[in-house]
Length: 168
Ligand SMILES: [Zn+2]
Image (cartoon, rainbow, N blue to C red; front, side, top):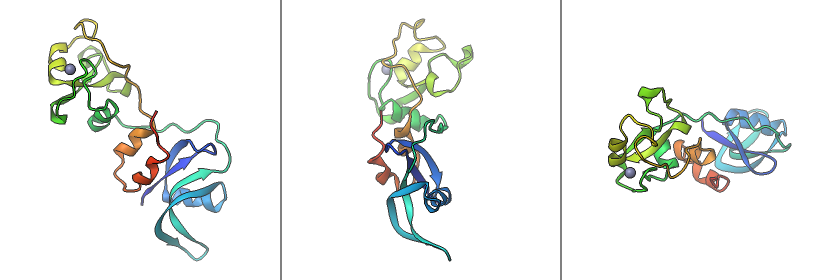
């Protein structure tokens, strides 16, 4: 089963749900269909195009947090395949994922503590903090929001999602 992008009443992406969940929201009229696939879902009681994007009818004040696992692909994509220390854009295979606070010093593998780094900078930094290694981060690493969902998911429907996911 695919996934469905859920937009808030304001058209901001708030969540990703299963098709089944999306259908429930549609049938209960809690959401409206924005984008659909060509395929149809049929049951005794209804027939509905497979939803790709739905929009909540009522504004959801606190959007549910989406837990995105930290992956190499995700980190490199978030950092635009650019070394966050020197700005180099080497081949993807020459990019590493660097722990800003080294793991040996208690640094965790979280979106806020990992960045893309070229081989050279990573080697130069070693088991030191950026300050100790006299390296400066180009940007403060943050947990990506919706852009990463589009990047990380493999479903073809993501092309449709892109319209609503501008990245921030
Ligand atoms: Zn570098």
